[in-house]
Length: 439
Image (cartoon, rainbow, N blue to C red):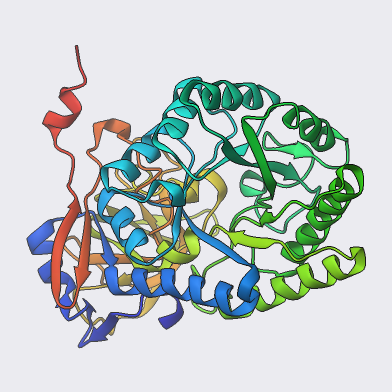
């Protein structure tokens, strides 16, 4: 199962170890459930995406923007800055985290399909490098904010290239019937371009596309690149000038189950360069600076969730087969993805060796929902019992970000582990935190 764990994970005598610290010690010191983040692995992945972009695109390499929606806190924002890459934020809250981390504002890209006037004003006021325009209303809002603060604001126009990415419907974002961007096929994108050009306060730098998440084929990325280059060509032919930038988004898939495929930077970026180069050559167009937005691909594999088993019960199915229900001390409040769109995970007993036979099992949470399922079907040792520790890998992307307080359960902490030392970077919520919101 090595492909689903971060680089500093090892298994010794049945104990899961992160950077030399055994799972029982992590549980004793920080409690459960807890997200444990492999800091070394995170930093390495961030740098590897930047290196691959630079090596593949050379002088045409734009920026790597870490997609903060995957997981963001002040300390992680600092790591991103130290890795030399940018940060993509899509709400005022994510921008506030970046500013609290003293993130270089010129390396911040502001995203989102419904940015408020307040969010746009704040971004332009502090000097963010790029705003990604997602609606006609935003053109007027960005122009007004740029006037207010006496700035020329660089923007990209988010377009939908009409691609049915091979992923779950909930995380596919580039076909026609979605809330994001301007359709190329319908002419909406061209209308937005014309609306942008009447505002001298706005500098249109190019186009942005994000085709979806957890995509494991490079073909769709190449197709999106070709359609955006076609739009660049149309712009040049109409206005006599070339736009210098493309942002081809993220969505690169990672491994969640043993044997899963994943898209690595050294695999996808040379192919992406070839696609852009060939498309530009057909149109006699200069290769633009190309940016990307990996989020899940950086943080996803660097984190695992450690739970404690609370109860175990055998349930006899209609077929006569027995399914073991293993209840842990978290659930859909710290990982909504299985309930939301059927995401699959694996798990291991992290505190001991078991030589017991493997049996059909289901890992469930402690919430008042039948659908509160962490892992729907998994083979786990028959002797699993209350007090055992269960580790679920690859929970860095969207686990803590999408966490809730359902049933008034406090959200888990995030603990960074680096070179044999562990420290809290996002503390566990308390009941007092929950009660403080009551008026």
